[in-house]
Amino acid sequence: MKSYAPSRSSLLMAPALAWLTALMVVPCALVLALAFFRRGIYGGIEYTFTLENFGLVFDPLYAGIFLNSARIAGTATLIAVVIGYAAAYAIAAAPRRLQPVFLFFAVLPFWSNYLIRTYAWIVLLNREGLITQLLRWFGYTGEPPSMLYTEGAVIAGLVYNYLPFVILACYAPLSRLNPELAEASRDLGASAMTTFRRVILPLTVPGIAAGAVFVFVLSIGNFVTPALLGGGRFQMIGNLVYDQFLTANDWPFGAALAMALIAIMLLVLTAQALAADRAAGRIAEAKGGADG
Amino acid sequence: MAERSPATRRTLWLVLSLVFAFLYIPIAVLVALSFNQGGLPTVWSGFSLKWYASLAGNAAILSAALNTLIVALVSTAIATLFGTLLAIGVEIRRQYGSGLEALIFAPMIIPDIVLAIALLSFFSLLDFTLGLHTIILAHVVFNLAFVCSVVRARLKSFDWSIVEASADLGASAITTFRRVTLPVILPAVVAGALLAFTLSVDEFIIAFFTSGAGRASTTLPMQIYSMIRFGITPEINALATIVMAVSITALTLSQRLNRGVIGQ
Image (cartoon, rainbow over all chains, first blue to last red; front, side):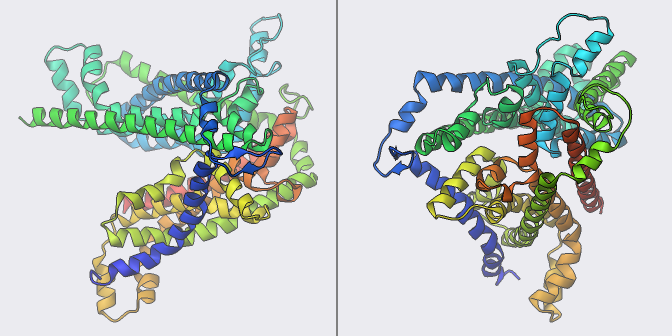
């Protein structure tokens, strides 16, 4: 097998790699190229080189949308990480045989239809929705509160949709945590809070970072949630890209926006890799300390 | 983990209950309201199956469901075949560059909207007519990545010496694959296919951009999206319940198969 494996493996990989090249690499390269062209007068593409589209990304109007998206995505990330970490901690602390069951049910909604999960929040938050009904039941008689089509609704939708992934990402390092480390810390007189802050939290940073990156990247590029729960009033980068391609018909600018989105994603992923590396150093240190 | 006081344990159970309530109450409300008799989408007025019946008479929804089924079945079949071959190829090669690794993982992490506009630009540059076939071409891209990763996980613990033994005993490469490799990885292949099928059934953004204008290639998620934009109706609740039931069944099955693999 060792002698003929490489040529055979190439043959096995060929169809899939050809597919990915033709329908992912080439189209993405095309978008990158598009970003350097000019928009034609009638919405087509004029093949002259320009950097205008990237300049436009930094135009105050669009830069404002970027900052707004980053703020909404950042808030959603923070909330999802706090809830997700607490949930993962509670699952990791549950009896061993129950842990896979809890984990499965925590992740299950994540694999069901995104649109439907977002729609479920319209049902909850609309003026005659469950929350208003509950308030009435408790004796509230005033105007129904407007919860739908607010920034809060968009954030709630993002947290709801991406929370399962944070739970999964944080559970992995928490379940591998050596219980003796926490015990040692307690024995040496550290309070539960200090043990958590100085021992448990630093060792589980990679999970938090992975979960946070995921929520942030998917939120900032989202267009379904702002469109449905924000009622189109809150533009995010995803909505902007959508508009350039389907309504404004300015493909080159839309392409530049998409590239900016990829750049943000790569930046965040690099930051995550650095955080994971530093945590790996700490884990090695902790292991060395425990052995020695 | 360390011994916990009863108070701590109560807090942990409380956290778990609250998180599960947060995850499942919105879905539960939706499902409950799909059986609501009244036309008001959020006020309960008695049990009824009439919204399910009205779905069955809705031609637009039926045609969208058929389109979704076609896209999901064809893209899953292609992705399962090529994705499994890819996984085997990658695993027998062992030393592969990080470039190859990145290429295989990329469809999982590229934002949907970016892949969607990239494919739209690509197809329109080539003057491709958009339709169900372009959605299928697009769905295979991310499905390949998921099938490949599920099968690769199974192959990590695969004992390659049995393949060598089979070859030494004179079996052809195809016989070896059919009689030795495939039976071992089959649960993972089926699990990967079920995952791919669900992802394809639920995928909205890429389908939306690569389907073209006509109604003829509207998929179920696209139909649901346009219905939601018009407001809440008990009909959407019923449709959403069916779609969720299908994906949850497929995923539970996929998970069971995969756990069987891990358990061995």
